[in-house]
Image (cartoon, rainbow, N blue to C red; front, top):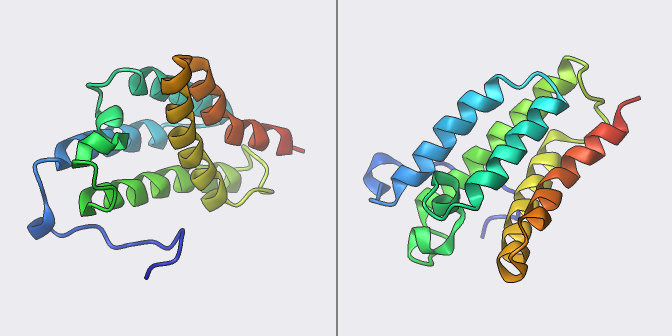
Length: 152
């Protein structure tokens, strides 16, 4: 049994399913956007775009993050790989900004990425129940707010 937070290998081509497209699309877009991030303001803009996209059920992120995207199987290899790769993209971006001195290095990049992913999942659930997208925005921005406060 894998430990929580342990990295898994992405699925091989033989495990690909028709559900892979939303995952690939979301990762490709985020990879390009996160590569251009130069500071917290850019990360906030990325999060705002993510909130807008998650509010649209047909968006790549909404499909990838929704239980329906994988036939309600949250352990489907493409979903697991998506979450791992997405977390790695965020973690690498935070790490790069820390190395550049753009943000303080008091928070572990892996912890920030995990908190952001948890904020998305929890925020989506609460936002759907309350029909209030601002809850999702707050939940996603909270880990970044912590980075902002950690700047010396």
